[in-house]
Amino acid sequence: MVRPTHEVEYEQMLLSRHGWMNHRGGRTKDGVLERSAYILLSRIRIQGPMSIGELSDAFGLDASTLNRQTAAAMRAGLVERIPDPDGGMARKFRITDEGSRLLDEERQGLISALDQVMADWPEEDIAAFASYLRRFNTDIERIGGRPWPRP
Image (cartoon, rainbow, N blue to C red):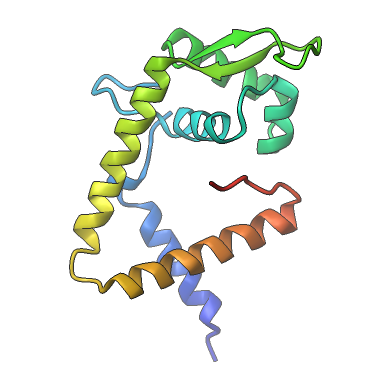
């Protein structure tokens, strides 16, 4: 008997192949945020300025990977380094106005695409789907020990 998790795995694989859902790394030539920049900016926006150490803990990535990602985001004008607002020694990254603008544009583009996909779905189905995705993500975060703040 095939377990339902087999179907979840297969559908997740299919979902990951759709180009409009995949971000490709800073900013591309067409102005779209790369996936890593989109996630980085989203986390900093919801949590506030973060140091490399805090980002490393939040993402479960080594500091060298985050140094590369934040350097690319700084070159693209998406984030800036600031002194720790709480007086700590480490400098922190915060989103620039340009980074905030591009994050909003990217998010709105994704929401518009999702609105197209779900145009014929009843609102209660969309709400149920969102609830299941939230539950799925929070269980992954719980197992990994890295909860993601939610608005």
